[in-house]
Image 1 (cartoon, rainbow, N blue to C red):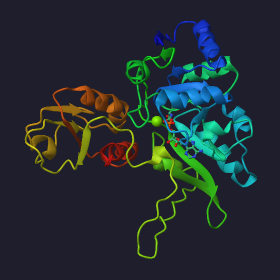
Image 2 (image 1 turned 45 degrees about the vertical axis):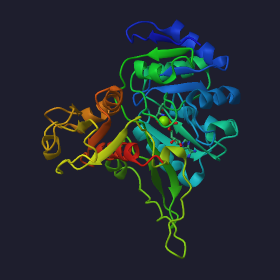
Image 3 (image 1 turned 90 degrees about the horizontal axis):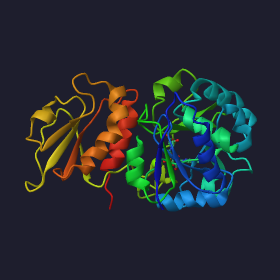
Image 4 (image 1 turned 180 degrees about the vertical axis):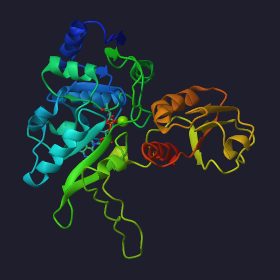
Length: 351
Ligand code: TXA
Ligand code: MG
């Protein structure tokens, strides 16, 4: 299949392009679409056969559920059933963080096919602020199920050319609205009541909306400690693949190091590249790196680093002079927590 990239110029009238994208989706086809976080691979969320194609195109296991995107929070009732005890919390979160880089997991409505939720009785719902995503949902007249537009387990694409590298030949159309402004996948929370019956949220995936921001709006319910067997072994908690230890991974080995450490290579034969926050650190100066890639050169701004993280990881993965990526730990405040979450998963043992 030939994959077309169509540029969307926000200053022009793009109605015919949106209608064309919607037509592909109506026919059960797939379209890659921009959001402010990362590019998504969209299908008509109410068409189970179309959704199956998403799993096939991504080589994604069927049990890993997708996020359903709405044009506005007003459509929430079409896809989710909000229990009375969570209604005020959900409304507050929607008012505060939608449209935006924010996803809520809620009990699913019957309209949502099981294949979207991987058989779970909950559905992940997001209202993106990106005008292209919004316009295509409106043109389709249905919500759009969209995971990140990468092959399973790989780095999420933050521009159209990255989507092309991941899914070229597997999908007919990519709408190209330039680089994503957030660059990290949405924060996912699940509204729930705690042991004392008080409503709040559990954070399932860290992202652009930070713990600090939630604190002012809702109670954050900490996850229960993972149960242990009698001989003190951890029982594996029930997880969905986005929460797998190894995820968001480049093809190359990734090693995480503190910025104040000095680096000593395991293997002198290999070429080590450094992924540095500011480019200046004990770690950066401790070794003759094949190359140093810097996320926020000179001034160490976490927001700039977040926008660039996946694109730079992709460049390092493609850099033929590097065998191993050494990533410097970032400050774990604000969006830094979500970036460290992705770096830890990228460096997790994949065996
Ligand atoms: O920023 C984003 O969230 C992007 C854009 C395209 O919206 N989407 C995205 O989708 O990152 P995906 O499929 O790559 O990651 C969604 C995560 C997965 O880890 C999945 O397991 C989790 O959301 N998820 C989906 N439905 C869930 C549910 N009902 N319960 C718990 N986790 C769920
Ligand atoms: Mg993904």
